[in-house]
Length: 153
Picture 1 (cartoon, rainbow, N blue to C red):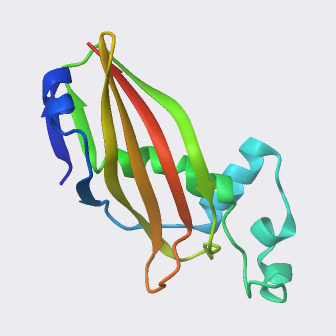
Picture 2: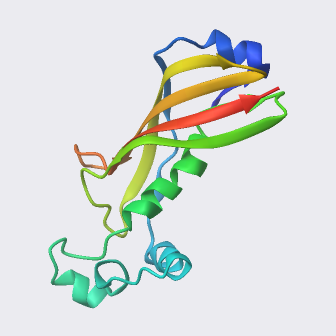
């Protein structure tokens, strides 16, 4: 269940951080999702889209694109924090992204989030969130990133 805040004043009250947001639900990475992402990005490298060849490759099977993992931060993030009562929400970017471990097709991932800081902006607030994409049954994460979100009244 996501944490919910209403309006900029409640969002600013979360600052300065850290604030643990907990975890999203687990989400399975299917070959169909990987193939759809490959089609959308024109990245059909065999380690992602050819299960037979990938089985003999360095990861023992097909893996998700790193940028697919980053793209899934969007729905995973919405399971951590819901901000209501604002006029506009902006994904402002990422300060840093790393991929410590590949995500094999069939694996389940989830996001853990910690608000690092909340800063007042003219007419809104900027939130820095440290996100870790965990892989079910593995110690090393799939992705670590600091996301920057802006919310305006």
